[in-house]
Figure (cartoon, rainbow, N blue to C red):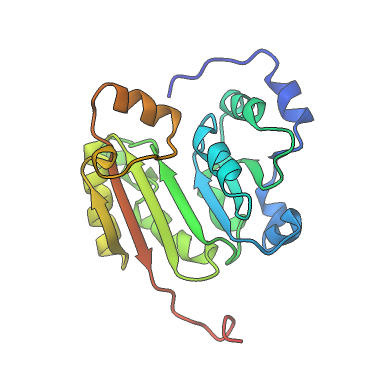
Length: 217
């Protein structure tokens, strides 16, 4: 990702009611933060926010949380959020700490155009590596349900193998999402790649949670 500095980013971050600096402060308390019991959808690496903001506007009865680590990118996202939107928060944080931010609270996870980390020695940094796939079940209140979109064929192939090897069931796979689905809410990267005629790879995967005594009511 090419990052352009935003001169007043500190001011934007400081004054935004949508920004959360420490996601762990709401661990197990996200429904209290939103003030309702609606489903929570999470996007890791939300970028400039186009996808998540449009989703929040379209689905007011779903709560959305985005995670991003770059201040300049976060600032651009915060500038786009309508002031009257009540179902969206942005966490300034790192995906490596995701298991410290949510405690069996979310319903859906989006991995949109994540960094592919193309070098083999960086494979475990990919958001569909075994390290992350082991973290995700602890985020969900029920079965794991995740969606991935990417323009990177190697990441797509890696994800198919990694998900399958780690107990995830592939519900839907597309080699060219925009040819099979219409009226999609897209990301900034997605619009760019699609305009160039590049295929958008897509995976929907689930993993059944083993009910523990803690979850049995």
